[in-house]
Image (cartoon, rainbow, N blue to C red; front, side, top):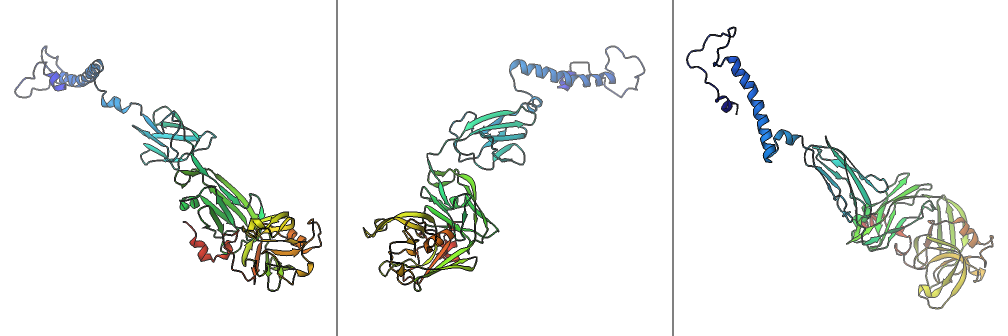
Length: 422
């Protein structure tokens, strides 16, 4: 353009180069070297000004210099105002030009949703998905631009599940207590659910999960817990898809501890029970177990429930109307199917230590009303806690099913680990 603009003036003289006469007055109508340089310095600026004015007047495109300074456009996914955003995908923020200087995503309770930038800082993505049924605010700013805010709310899942756990938070349990979780809906993606659950111990020990069917997951170490162990159960099940379209709702940590070690061994050949506390004999009691027609399960069993008094009715365990006792004293559950170790006031005191006469439970001499402190039934109950181990030997019955109660200790460590989904 500078060249074509210069062609409108007089042409330079032809022929040999003239001597430099810059110290002499310029001749009218002639182009001096200084004049040419002056034109060369003015014309480009005039041309840029002319082009800019012409483009603005005619609605033409913006020059590249102007484009480079245009404010960047920010794109947020989910979009502003979305009411039922998916909670199964991460949040995205992108800048059309330039770089992102900051991005902050918070839920309605102020909890942050973490995320990372790409190497060029043109994109940001949350490192986890947003929670379901939650309102979020996104505040983002591109370099050189103003901060912008976007708000959206994620949808709530139609079907959910929770895990009911044992033992209770803050409780103390015996060394045989597993961490047992029962789900309110059948789990088909066991790996996803198990991955969202952690069980840690202090002192540290390897803890492994084992599935008993599709609604129960138990955790235990290879050997009994050490006395005094502090255990933390971490549940991160919220929005974990346990089955097709069914999502968890829990996100919490609970702790409990292991108390002293107490292991009781019932020998139904000898009809005695020896109680060891910390490896030392605490007591030996005469007992009566299941008779020949109602043998007591053998194996390792864990006390899962305790009742100072409770009703026991034979129809609930498939034995018709053989008995119905509404005030059984000092009853402690050993199996889900109905095996207890409990006090007995209705049988002759002479059977304890000499005969197995029960319908499958282990009985100790006791008194009606559960308030006689001199009886073995009272003494054993007072010395026990949830999670204590009771081992039954020489009962004439098979080993109890590991899923029948909290009795996974009857599985070898190899078999226990085989039930892990991870």
